[in-house]
Length: 104
Image (cartoon, rainbow, N blue to C red):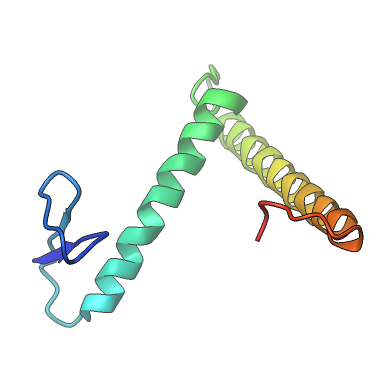
C-alpha cells in the first residue's frame, strides 16, 4: 500500500490517495507514475464523451463504430494541438512585449 499526500506535514485522510498494487516486481515510483496518468486518461475520455459524442454513436456494424471512435480521437488531438499552438503563440507575443503569461 502506498499513501500519497500533497503536504507530508499535514495528514488528512480526505486529501490522501491510497494506492494498492499486487505486483511485487513494480517499484513504488512506477506505481505512483502509473496512477498519475490515470487522471489524464479519465479527463480525456470525459472530454471526448461530453464534447465529441464518443458515447452517442448508434451503428449496427463494428467497423462504423471504430470509424466513429477514430474520428473522435483525431478531432480531440487536433483540438489539443491547436490549443497548445495558441498558447505558444500568445506566450511568444507576450514575451516579446515583456508581458507575463500564465502559460509555463
